[in-house]
Length: 302
Ligand SMILES: [Zn+2]
Image (tube, rainbow, N blue to C red; front, side):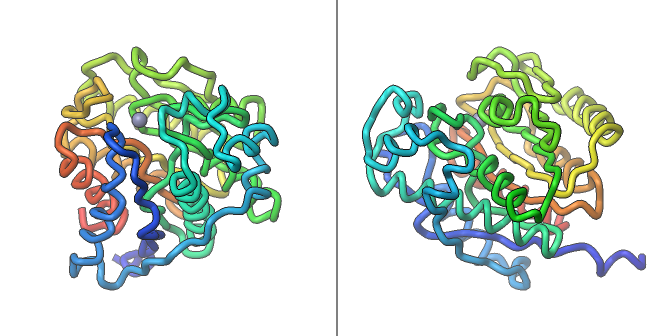
């Protein structure tokens, strides 16, 4: 009972410029604006703060990304370092990635100050230091970790990546770095080519709620025994959903909510920043609904 008022109210970070025109593309970039509208139009969220980010600078991005990669990106040169993004390349899109990454950096700071924050974008975990992959130009999470470490605001970060695709970019960037623990739980027989995270759980295709939630709880227990983070990054991708076009595992909406609750309640007292990551449901409204559900769980409405 006495803890009731001490639960942090999540702060949301959003800009209308997160949306980008990708042309006909499987990535539903309209989800950013729709999710924001659903939150601000809902009276349950009227006490919550919505904050607008500034874009990252190229110098900040250079804390993670190579000079050659950023030169291609900033000059809109579709080189072999960029073409695996499977995204078009134009100024609007590049600017949207700098802005979304600024959103993750801001949300991480707000989480450190107040306990809980969420960027209504971000989680671009397939981006490497020297090349783009899988709809990800800049690696917002890795850049944010390096910014906060440089400013001595954190020493150790934990990445909990529950997108259905492995967080290969983060695994590679932080490989051998004992200040950042990378945990990825993903469908084994799916994109991408796997890198080695500190803890990987490769799920069988068709994996359902009960097995998923059991494996998740076991993994978190294992992590708790070996790592003490100052900040948690939660990549709450909604592509483990049973009707996702790019995922092959079979979580129900209820199972997804339980997943979010398990992560929310992990290590109470440690600040957590949540990112959207992927989601490609047959019906985009389901994708938006599942991201909205994550917001509701964080705000303890579920
Ligand atoms: Zn994904």
